Image (cartoon, rainbow, N blue to C red; front, side, top):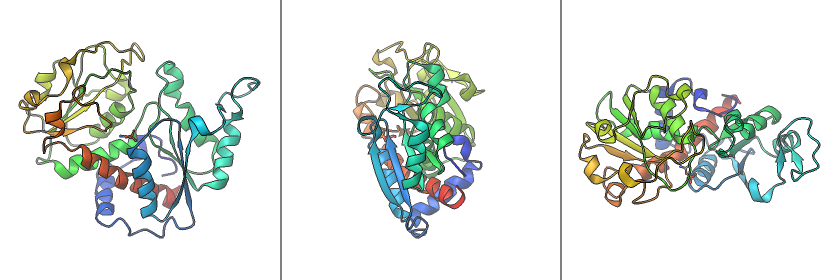
Length: 315
Ligand code: CP
């Protein structure tokens, strides 16, 4: 694996999940691998889990880390070629990526979608230009369209908790007051498509994800119907993809509640966090023993450690 920019970088998910589970049992087995090497972590957006779990993963491998809040501490970047840089952008990505490559052996980047320019968001301008101009491996810590580190951690969490060979997994849209990107929904969908699972997306009409990602995954517009006999329920908000960036509804009828969870097969509840209590999901679901949200967050460390190991060995 040279770069880890989207979930397609994982060629064998089942093998990756088993390797992540082994790392979790013995996290210091490869603590010499990153000795005298540095992971640079560039954040264009806020983070709690990704920032801390990726640093912890690096520590397990003996890597040093350098963390920079790029959006307010670095020079504003220009991404277009041939531009006369007489405006607010002070540094071109060509130099920035090349310079970061002098100080670091691997660079991990978080750069969310603008939700205003669909074409630019889908081009993954920040991640792809770093990959183009850096001479070191690039890792996605959530980009405009993908959050593959989260999806790998979620795959591990499902593997640890499934009670049947082929569980029913429901990705349910849930309400949120802000327009949120599609990255988590996209990567979760791509990940579950590679699992042996009965997978359904439940959402209100108008909230269809990119059809190039959902492909043949069934979409149900009735949440209660989708939840019937589910083994895992993954709640997540995203804004409209078709009417790009828009919030089409704000009512609470799609919030996950204990009453709705009664329709399931005693399902485990999942969310990537951060989550807005009693907006996305009610307290009684989040505080129930079937909630896996903290275990998902814990597995972020070992998912990131597996990815760092791959790029250190093969990047
Ligand atoms: N789930 C997740 O990526 O959390 P953070 O945004 O806090 O990193």
